[in-house]
Length: 311
Length: 287
Image (cartoon, rainbow over all chains, first blue to last red; front, side, top):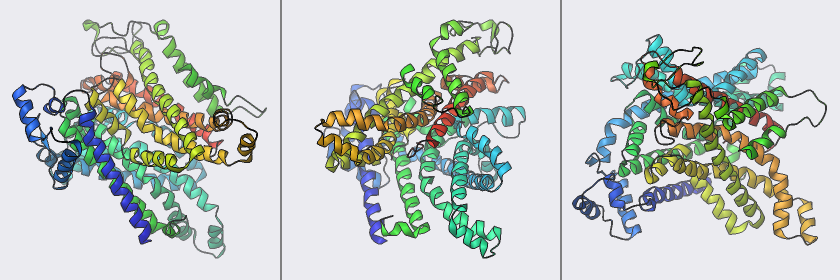
């Protein structure tokens, strides 16, 4: 098992390194002078000279990359020349909102998806309705859901605020409910479909038949025998869900005017603040890769067959 | 575009005399109608989509404007109809490029194996680390907003999905006896790959393309919604959801909601069609 974990860890680090070379290298692949790009497009020659000096732009690529990487690992994500502040300072106040929103949405997805999927697999009549619901839900992009939710629940009914993220736990919950729902809809549908398929497949297995014939209660069979095995495929693809949440978060934050990493990425892209774009992309990609690695590890725990590295 | 759409609609033509498949028929009809709307937009649109009228902003449905007007007084129905064009063209390009590149890489990997296969698979693994939308935003930061940068970026990030599925199938085909027979029979590698292996992975390829189309449409519309893709006032659904958002607070949600509805209808049609075709076809994977 440790060998498998070791192999996965090495491949994770390699992926992170190559991705970071890509993100850093984007600065030099882009058309135009890197210094101009960092400055945000409009800068006097004096400013450009300063940027070239402070960012060591005249040194060879891998020397610069190495300096940048060491800086990143020490928590220095570079300097935003548009805001004239270190990117870390700019991000500090924003990370909290994003983490809160993504965790909130993830909770809704896991709870809603598994319950709906289980219901759809066990009850024929509910199953038909849920199948239709999830087919439509899967096709609702987060920003369209956001617009519809704002129209109905914020403007028409006035139950929720239109934008912002609030302060304090309760206010944050209240402000971020609609964004979390908007973010969760399509992935809840996806998880529900997956759970349904997995539970259906598991129900037809012989061990379930055996458990039933031994007189074990239906509830026990479903919770301990069916759902537990069905969780394996659900866990395996939850890596996809993480990617979807990271991308969806960017859109939802912008739709609801939430001051988080995602809306910061959009604004930085619009303002051509290249250093900030690099920093946020790196954070999002690294989060995705690391969470995916943890999901992999978790499926090893769930499914002993994978531990031999052969299954 | 017709070249991409045609096989999707034509493939499930009743081979046997079983009862018609309503999912395939209805979703196929929706998609065919959308394509017709894109092609014949100038004939179908009742009004010029760019004609603004400050005296008739945010109007409700009326005889003159069947779906009302937006905050510039432009006819919404006309803008939605013209919007089909870019809204479908973008994802069609993405899927076309990703399928072409993915198929070539997949068949070459399956045929040659060895270091080439390992390099391609490793590169695909690394590309998986970038969620498509993040990749598209990085591209916009590099090359500026517009349709080109996001389409190229999303094509690159959809390629590994298609590549993986097709590679698995091509590898299966490569190990079948008929390929060995072709080889012994003296056919060139090129002939075997294009005439035989490609032709046999074709059904899978079409299904996988249909399944990916909806996702590409959502990603691209999201980029435009964020103001990084197609730029207003060009009519495109993602742009319209965004430009209509400010009118929602004033009680005029029609532009955003209608454009959003068009996106949902299109994506659901492609998803259902793809799912149905996939259930007849082993080995497909949802992106």
